[in-house]
Image 1 (cartoon, protein in one colour):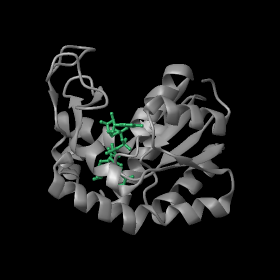
Image 2 (cartoon, helix red, strand yellow; image 1 turned 135 degrees about the horizontal axis):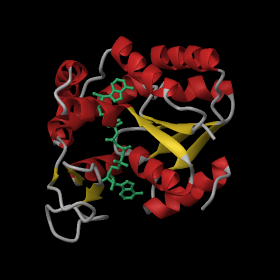
Image 3 (cartoon, rainbow, N blue to C red; image 1 turned 90 degrees about the horizontal axis):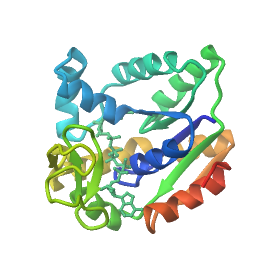
Image 4 (tube, rainbow, N blue to C red; image 1 turned 120 degrees about the horizontal axis):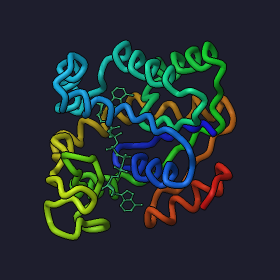
Length: 215
Ligand code: AP5
């Protein structure tokens, strides 16, 4: 099973990907996570991407497409979830070309719809473990001990781009560049639009039903 999961910042792409890979042998390819790992490790890619992430702007297409190409080449037959890629029509066209070259196809393109009024609370309340990346929320999914990761004991912090002033730039980038992909993928078929409100498990139940995977 190969999926594209897209939607606005904070719509739950990472949360739903994590629930899917708990049940299915799939690899999550999250461009946001890959950029954050590169920044943490101080690699040349991280140095190039940092300014864009901190400002809430999209990393240039050539860099992002090259990164996804590397990940697709490492799959070895495993199914994938593309989380946060593509994010504009140029990336979507490039992805189409890459998949064709590799003889792969996407089974479903899934869009998570969440009203903007809910996104702000999800993003400002999100906390992540600096060490293992586990995602929390101060209200809907707090860690047992504040600031300490339940999984690895690492420090739980706010993402630098989850500050209100950066969130508005991310939402603008989404409206301008990513929302138009809805029409792009609707026209291609196998497009599923899901209500991303309710609890994470409720959203997962809708997703699992729509793409016919285990609940
Ligand atoms: P990226 O990391 O992809 O950020 P994003 O798209 O803004 O998405 P988020 O990670 O913020 O949210 P999410 O939808 O995964 O939500 P989550 O599940 O965590 O990208 C970051 C940056 O990298 C970009 O700004 C850009 O600079 C760069 N970048 C990445 N991809 C790029 C690309 N293709 N091209 C160019 N640049 C790129 O949930 C959010 C919170 O809500 C959590 O706290 C969670 O616990 C909570 N939550 C989730 N679901 C629910 C629910 N159902 N009910 C209540 N709370 C919930």
